[in-house]
Length: 103
Image (cartoon, rainbow, N blue to C red; front, top):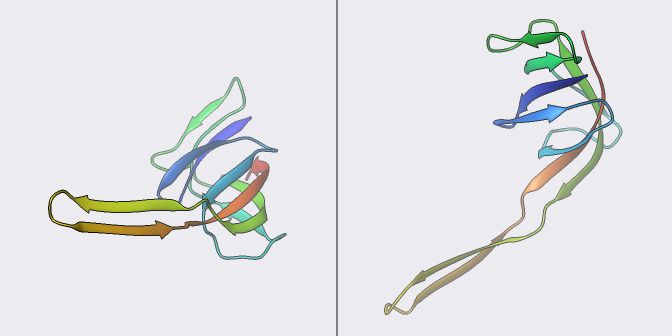
């Protein structure tokens, strides 16, 4: 069984037992989370499609980690103008373990 959920402006295909790295959510390690924006579920034979979301269906998970991602370098440059600007950015993320898909 798997589902497609929406969180942080992105869509993810999840199944029970999956580890998922998503945009930062509020909460501590070990807290449980429920995603109610479920777009699609399938168990092999039955397919449920929401318009836009499925009513009464949730995906449950647990927060495993709160951290920052690898550094991304932003380098701006204009030729012949002696302009160079270097910045770095580390995006915060939350790692989730999907427990089950249910009502």
